[in-house]
Length: 62
Image 1 (cartoon, one colour):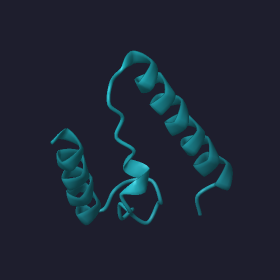
Image 2: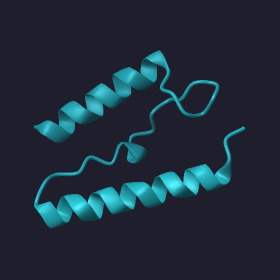
Image 3: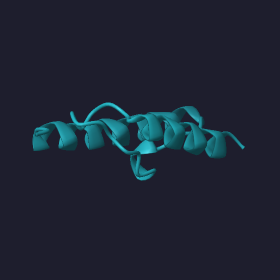
Image 4: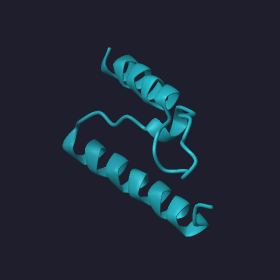
């Protein structure tokens, strides 16, 4: 089971990255909002997760 503190830290890190991107005037893609399927370890993407990530990234780059 994934440690809840790691999840909280991941969200905090994403917020810091978004703030930094805004300061530099660059785009930020928040993949945490894309409902990416994860593997049994709760960290790595499944095969479908990789497809979902790629589709989300493509949409962000349009």
